[in-house]
Structures are given as structure tokens and as C-alpha cells.
Length: 146
Image 1 (cartoon, rainbow, N blue to C red):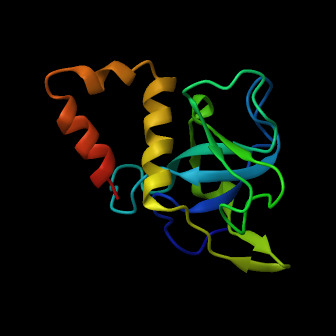
Image 2 (image 1 turned 180 degrees about the vertical axis):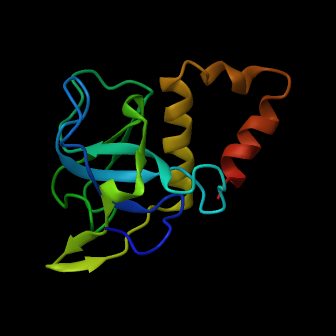
């Protein structure tokens, strides 16, 4: 169990084993989307699961991390952020990753976090919000979000 409050972009392990198909049903890496400063429901976090399985058809709600992009993802095969599987989980489901048999902190770069957030907009059918007159404000919010 976590002893700290994760921040947006942190990569943790999440236990989905009590979920039911077609939901995620195993322990897997997730990317935290909730900013640390969030005060509502402080023990829950929005997460996007990461999978080593290539989507049968790559869509805008998928984001690919290429091999060797990060030491905590697969060094040979790409992994995919599945923004269409965005979910909210309680803190007790989350834990740090083990890298070389040691618990380690892991975080994706800000530009990759922005790309995952754009994929979430696509998953929610909100991709066209960026084309509205105030679209610049939405894009700026994605870039500036913690």
C-alpha cells in the first residue's frame, strides 16, 4: 500500500483483480492522471491502465510508449496507455513498482502525460472540444495541468 500521495504522471501498480470482465481483471501498471493537489475524494485517483498487448486497431484513445522510452516499461516491445479504460480507484489498490526487486518511483515525462490526457479526450468523445472557439484554453489546460 502507498505511504505517499501520487501525482499526475506517476506510474504505479494497480490491483484490478476484484473487477469483472470486460473490465481490467489483473494487476498492471497505471498512469496517475489526478493531480496531487486534488482535494475532493483524496483517497481516490483517476488512472489509465498500461498494456503490453498491441490494440487490434490502434485508435486515438491509445498512446504508444516505444521500447526503451522508459526503464520501467518493456525494453523490447511497445506498451500502450489505454485511455478508453480510464477508471477511478482507491489508494489501497495502488502500490509502487518493483524494478530490479526494489520498490522504485516512476514517472512519465510531461509531454507524454499531455498525450495521454489528449487520448482520454478522444476516449470520452471530447476531442472536438479543442476545435471550439475556446479550444486554445482547453489545449493550454492540458499542457499546464500538473
